[in-house]
Image 1 (cartoon, rainbow, N blue to C red):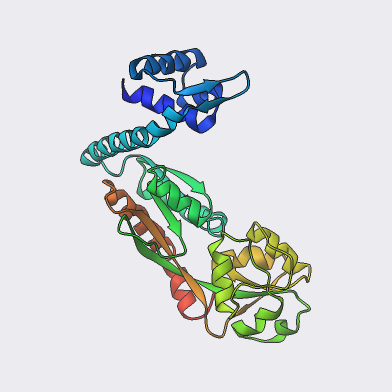
Image 2 (cartoon, rainbow, N blue to C red; image 1 turned 90 degrees about the horizontal axis):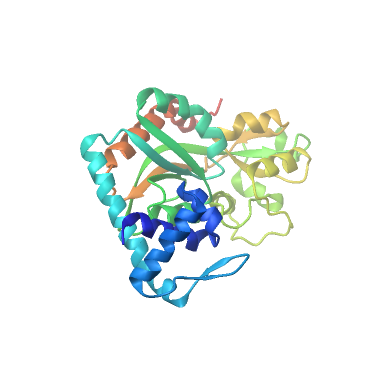
Length: 302
């Protein structure tokens, strides 16, 4: 039994297919199948129930998977610690980022990150907060850019910059004539993202809503919200980094009276051995967005 075979086992369990598992592992399907058979012989149990269309873990495999994941994770931690001793700012760095931030932040920071950390290979992974935290805890990500605080002693985080919310209004909306809009005035016809997006809860809280909405729209992306507001369907709260895209779509933007907003932070596992890489990435992003945060503090986004 070796680490390679354990990785093969996890890949087959995840993909439910020998071909896709072999592709994910970068080996041929016969090679992977032979190693799984040898592993089954060594363990003395059948790990997968095979059919012509799919592969399913056996009950014995299900009982072993937790131990296998732990063994692979601990081995990866050893390898990461060794890399950290050599150069924590080199190699692959898997960075999660929430969907309401990724399209607007990544174009601003990717070039500065490459310039400041040329040996660090940053791989962005876009997903909702809950999924990113799961991947972070499962050692599938090295860090994540979030807009909410993290809970639990296994995770740590630091704030990188503050991002204001702006009132997004159709051009003919009565509130569009005001220089400043009170958050609670948006509550009557506010449009929000679907469940699972932290921006949904933040927008409702800022406008004094508990979560019950009269409208049927639950958008899966911020771009959908922008298009619906531009079409006159309702109002919304827009993160400051998306202001340019919102204005290009014909939306009227107004600052909020209470200056509601969110703090963008970088989170990582407390025991992650490459904390120097996390801090270096965070420092570059914070530096790039420093002027933006200062403008936000003045109530300006342009």
